[in-house]
Length: 235
Ligand SMILES: [Zn+2]
Image: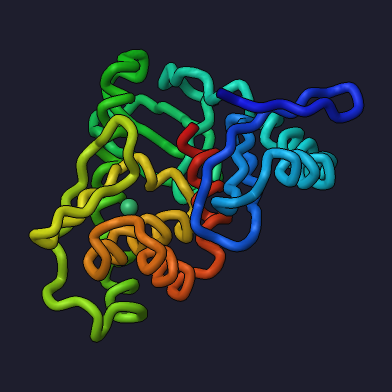
């Protein structure tokens, strides 16, 4: 059950989760929801006091996220539409040509094909292109993370699989297999690094324990920022 407090003219609704920690943390998510991570023994009165104290900050975060709502409209795969690649926005331009090509040129994502009005085919070409770029980019992000952060921590290089997943950016299987969602190629490079580092941390800790987060914090102290960016791009 969400809790709520009245702040000025607005109501702040929030959920509480308990954790074995000393301080209280407030999280504002891109869907505008608020969660309080409270120490096991913190009273509701203490939590409310903290929320009131941080209320203006909470509203500020919510206003910030509000600008990204409603979520990305459905793509139609016609010229002039925006598409994202590595965190940058490109305008789609579909041109007539005997051969199928997809490339980034200037600020545009240029697709050439015999029949530019075949939007299904435009979608197919762009999807293939994203997948291909993802393959190259993710392999190099993996190599980078392994040499920079995991030199003596893990044995063999994990196998990389690129597969579209409904609700996940990446996953790790204990046999040493990392699966990454090709969709994250739309986000900035550091977001991809974050997902790769997160999955590699699972080679050391196959859980989301305190030790797991400690390792992730050490390797990428600003990971929450990139996680948030990713949530916004993928929304
Ligand atoms: Zn994980």
